[in-house]
Image 1: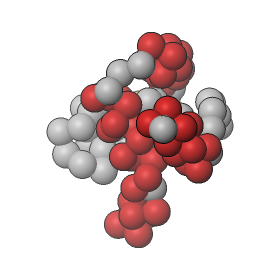
Image 2: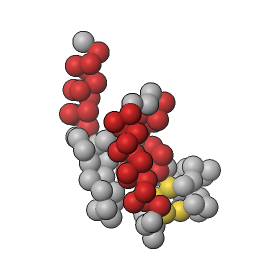
Image 3: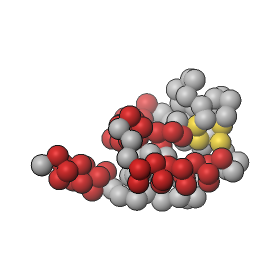
Length: 101
């Protein structure tokens, strides 16, 4: 993943980080389901040689994302099409804002 691509994905990355810190059961259920798929994938990198950020394994060997964040980002999808986004970034933000109000 290039720096430009990383910048474009910053909202999805932040969403995954936020959902990793502030856990909600429905998101954890989705993350567990996604992680099961990732664990059987040819592209999983458990050693960290293809991770965008060193030391963040396991990661997706295709896009370099840390899987514990990527699987918790509801607006993210698998780059190989093995699982889809549940919401768009805008929908996720609208849901969060409606809960805050």
